[in-house]
Length: 493
Image 1 (tube, rainbow, N blue to C red):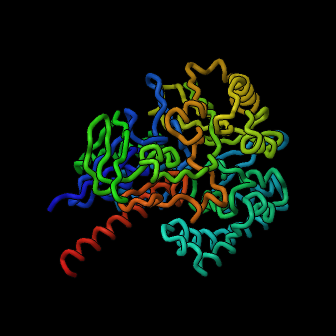
Image 2 (cartoon, rainbow, N blue to C red; image 1 turned 180 degrees about the vertical axis):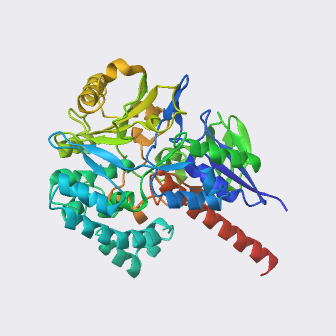
Image 3 (cartoon, rainbow, N blue to C red; image 1 turned 135 degrees about the vertical axis):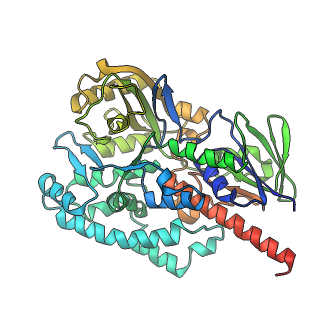
């Protein structure tokens, strides 16, 4: 029997996990075409000599979802070196003592009693309400596709949306649980994990802050990008054909059917094509009449600082958030005014505290993320001033003498991200606004082409590594189901 030619355009985590799940089928020949000289997309390393650190995602959430999908693809749980973070992270405020987040509810309530007394009952109510909402939201939205739009607007789904209070934004919902505005910020900053504004992201995304307590925050030994190495080893062993430095130039469509694609001047036959680039940028590969020509809102961008250090800071946490004096103003500058912030909140990641594989002995690595606007209209002329301000803040608020400990530094801005193919330079695909979520988000079959599919951060169910992997699982299940249907039809079953 002739093998199905499944071609994946882009080797990000969505494309790799789709290939992992589909490559169990010996009747498929899978090819991946990646324009870069590495696989993983956002999930890769920044390297300098003996130093390395994750370039993009760092916080491992929803470990059970991640491990279950990998296990389904043939990677054993014990092969994935996850380490729990306890405390989850530390939040620094300019006018208050730092606040730690913990998985254990009783320990968290002790911390609340010390730092934000009077909010313990609200926290209990938060956990109770969110547990029900998480289970419902996961089953009805994260694990479902809405290629058929009417499926989303079922009575059951609409009832769940009302329970999730999707008509509210995350910040408004958190204010119903917590009295202190600083504490509200500590439970809304998680929308930035997927590039969303706390006051523009639907309340269903408040489930992210709940999942931190319920499922923990984890670190992957060797860095999150080690996940790519694990997957690629399996793909190569199964004969998946991987082309790096191979940019796809065109997808040939005839009568609503992909016939072939052209990469590096060569034509390749296609039975199924899967797009795994940043979705809004992929239209250019299709004939003009097949493009969607829809306007999307990008997620926030990130100004990222990667540093090699002559020492580690043992009094630090691996993950830390440093809040500005006016978080709302920072968010307005990023999402509405499209200005570089003058007093930003920022995040630091210091994995060499627990992982000595990332730097030479006795030395360390440090990563700082500053939420900034995405889009062509942003003026980057004062980027260096912003970087200097943040490093000064880091020295004052937890990293003493930092400038003298830095032996190399690399900066990555949304300008570089856009040049690398991220939509408008946003770091997380399209923004998780109400009308870019659920049924309104691009689905796994976004074009009127019957064998063309998509997966990735801008595709439902959305951004974040485990959620993108869940999207890959939905797509792989869909393709396997329809292959089985076609096979049974031919056999007359």
